Amino acid sequence: MALTVNQILEIREWTGSEPDVASLDAIFLRVGSVEGVALSVLRQRRSESRELLASNPMKLGLAGDYNHDMAGNATVYDDDIARLEELIAVAEANDPLSSGAAIGSATRADRDGLFSSR
Image 1 (tube, rainbow, N blue to C red):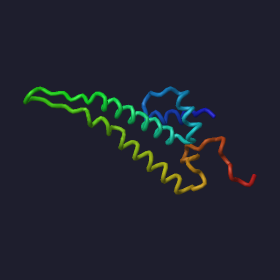
Image 2: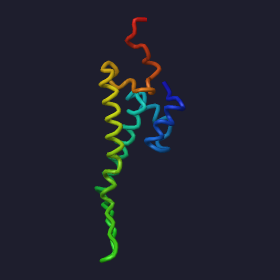
Image 3: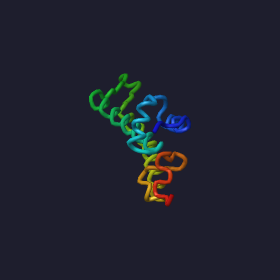
Image 4: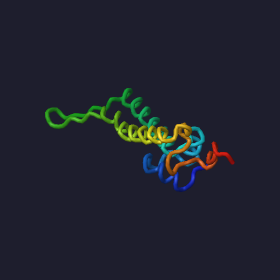
């Protein structure tokens, strides 16, 4: 099932304009929630950032005048990741049967009524 326009916009609030919608749809099919998609994208970016910094630490400086260390970039995604993990944990605690399939307004339409008596 493809993401709706509103779901894509919600993901973009966390991730910006990348990755493309097809990639977001693929992640959504795997994780089942908007927050899970955003979390997956940010975790991947954090991993890529750490790999880049490990291979090229990027320390800049002018003797006695200016120093800049890019190592702090390795933690740039940590706060957003922690907030998303908290949102997911709260949603799962409120609905233990969901196992991440539905979070607030980000419910997957193909899972509506999964456990209903209809």
